[in-house]
Length: 111
Length: 113
Image 1 (tube, rainbow over the protein chains, first blue to last red):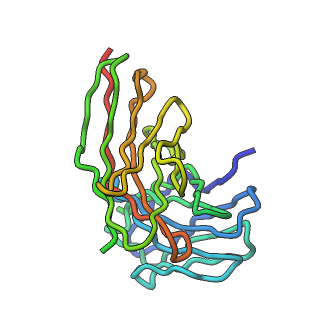
Image 2: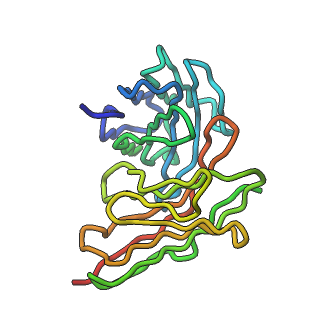
């Protein structure tokens, strides 16, 4: 009964490809997020959705497009992958008081 | 500007010794403060949080943290470290703006037997 799950856990792909990462939460939360963790382990928010509505978009290249089909799911699609996109991507969710629960992460490697 | 600073990139302590990880923040409004732990290859687990009230907060795994507004600090402590505590620890601050969290750079904790 995983609270926040992501698929896939690992993703290896070549430059120029398009890929998607899926996230699902079963906590009944209204808000979901995508964070990027770089090679130095620095975490930075990318997007936030509340009840399927985009509320945070942090200067992320428009090659990244989040999609929230319902409030339990937030997917991340990345077009034309670049070497610099290699990172660990974390999905998170929260309800009240900004207490965020994180998924296990997706390690993306672009070759 | 909003920011979180964790001055120590890497700390090594002996098993059974006490631990204090430092965190300083800069935030314009009332801060909501968090400590997360990340074990290798894993996601982030919430250790504890501070929203208001008692400035000493207790968390899971025997951790506690103290909010000091005058010093803009939220240091994490544990009286006796276990080998399983070896991990990366992140301090984070949030507030308004839809729950956006700003993370520190992380402190890697190693535990000597």
